[in-house]
Image (cartoon, rainbow, N blue to C red):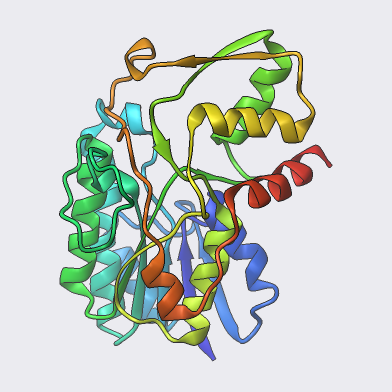
Length: 285
């Protein structure tokens, strides 16, 4: 039986991995967050991986507060860049596999067709720069590394855009939402399903992209959230990016091409509206 370590287990993706572990019973799991294992402590990582004879690490831990990252560069770098290197070294010493979750922010968002894995990266924020450095660190130190870049993650767990828009939709009579940033939402459960598909089929090292199918703007996304939740008392107003200034630069276009992950692991990816409906129904229940 293979031993799988899932870090960042209290986050959106980590919690979805936890739920899916219940139906993937052929593995033994170690779910950790900072209280159980500080991944920024190299010795602690090495000891944990050796002691529990870990075969696969899925690193769901990250510093994801994109705007705060601009002011907390050191902490962000530690978690997103340095820590993946520690995990990669530890699992390499056991000849194991490493799955590092990354982001669409490794691109600057100036494209107009979906990004493939081969396209040159060009991050435009501290968050994006540290996540790209984490990818490079992972691949440098573990020969069996699989990078999975994702975007616009939401779930029934933690704080996320879907939950915020549900709350604001109920509280406010009008709401301004950015319409000129285009991407694809990703239901964390669907990403967890894809990760398990890779584990079950056999991890093929390399860089992969994963989000749900289709494209939308944050404005479209919010319209659909409100529609599915039956919220009709809040009027949405489309905003340009410059009308809503943020510390970190956001990619204007960050649609990811998912052909590689679909072909390699034989997975079907749900349309973003279908997955959103599933999540909203769970939140309303």
